[in-house]
Every structure is written in C-alpha cells, then in structure tokens.
Amino acid sequence: MVYQERVKRGWRHEQLAEAVGITEDQVEEIENSAVHPTPDILQRLGHAFDVNVLVVTNEPLLRLEFVGRDAGHRAA
Image 1: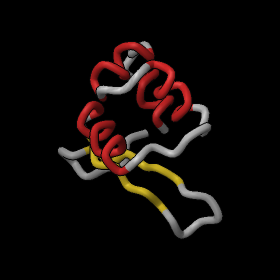
Image 2: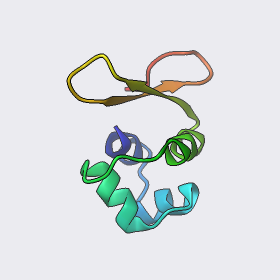
Image 3: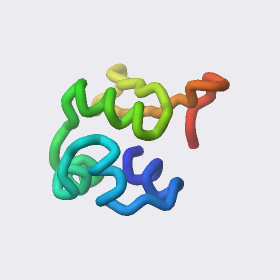
Image 4: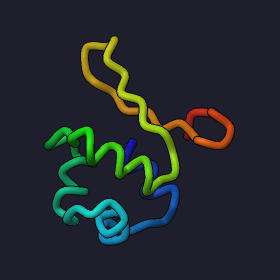
C-alpha cells in the first residue's frame, strides 16, 4: 500500500522519506515488506498521505489499508 500511495502521488522515495521523517532506505524497506513500520511511522505515513491507516489483522498476514479522511472511503 505504501508503494501504491507514493506512486499515485508521483512522489519519489526521497519526497516520502522527507515527509515522514525517515530515510529513503527505510521507505524502500517498508515498500518491499522487509520491515514492518512502527505505530509511530504508520501514523506519520497517514499524515503524509492525508489518510487514516487501518491495520487489518484478521488475515494470515497483516495488511495495511489507507482510508481517505474526508469521505471515509478506502484509498485505491
């Protein structure tokens, strides 16, 4: 989801890293599922993308969803 949201906005790794306050390497690791973002980083990602972050746990693997703040619709 992080990759999709970043690309949808036309942002480079550098731009997202700056908006979230992490390194470009961390952005790449999150996008590649090499690491799971901390709750703090999830909150900052939501702020950067201007969405609410849902962590879906009722599946075999954790899944992130970004939900638009204005209409309450899931971001595609």
